[in-house]
Image 1 (cartoon, helix red, strand yellow):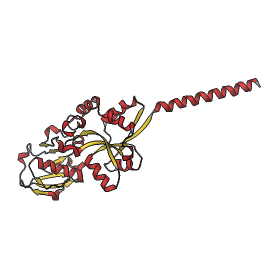
Image 2 (cartoon, rainbow, N blue to C red; image 1 turned 180 degrees about the vertical axis):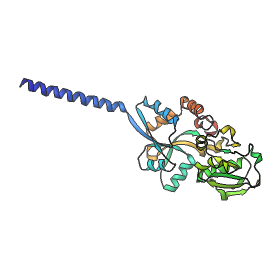
Image 3 (cartoon, rainbow, N blue to C red; image 1 turned 60 degrees about the vertical axis):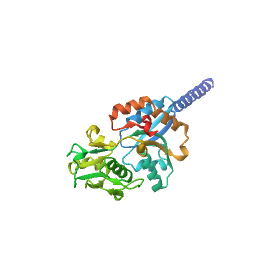
Length: 273
């Protein structure tokens, strides 16, 4: 009988110890926040994950293959935040899909550039030369504003211009649009192309060799990239800690070193405040 009692006590103590250990394991694992990105390269977010881990926050990066999926997943509650879009893209998405996704904080500004394999200076563009711009709403508008700032065309007052909003084209260049991901690949067939920073980076196009680059001014704010969440989570204290970790010198230094001009930490630019 005594042996049986000892056996029961031993089993109880062992079970209790396992329960306590399991509980400790769960508490040390902290809060997990799923953050969606487009593509597979986001070293700054990986650095943020290292920083917030010390506060018991575990960031799980969820990769998506295109710009449509992160917001769809966020609205459906499949992820908690995302890190891929600009203010303009988010606003356009909310209108089209009747979602309520909000910005929690800024991340980077990635200037768009005009590249060419055929000319070395924008002044060399002549009548009949082909110039391509991305064909999605926000990037097309941004590219056309880039061409306007370069003095190649004039636009009406449309907030997000399209090709039909060109009012003057005194240089006589032929402007057409195609998928943003194909703009860099088109450089063998056209005179110049407006290329997004990420696409240029993937294509190994050096921003220093661009014939014209977007200047960062107060008008650039709509194209600042942001961390986003559903409106109901805009005051989530855990999410605020992630934004705070993003806005550190450690992350800013990594962006400046890693991207060499492709991207700039937006929160450090006075023009964007």
